[in-house]
Image (cartoon, rainbow, N blue to C red; front, side, top):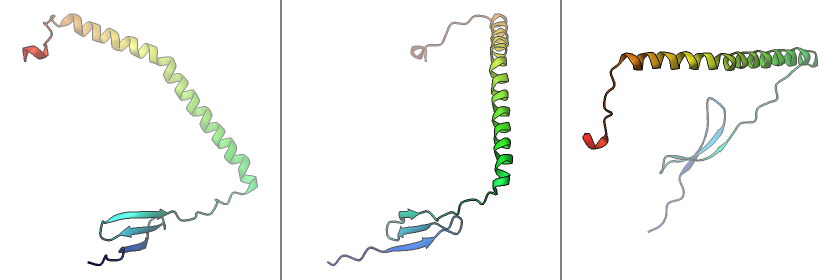
Length: 101
């Protein structure tokens, strides 16, 4: 019995323009070659503006995370107090064990 030649086809992806090699018998992608992307065109005069914008974004993210961390302890204390208040209001029950089921 003679072996069939490997039935594979090459397809270009319509979304990213990558080249895919697909085995038709197994219905799997054998290889993927990404399309070459050109470097973005950035004018040197815009570079200073872009760097300033990125620095401002970094500072904003840092400030937000710092505020969140500074309020974290207060939030955890408030959650603990609420849970403690709820636990005092409810009667104490015997815990359910796996053996009891």
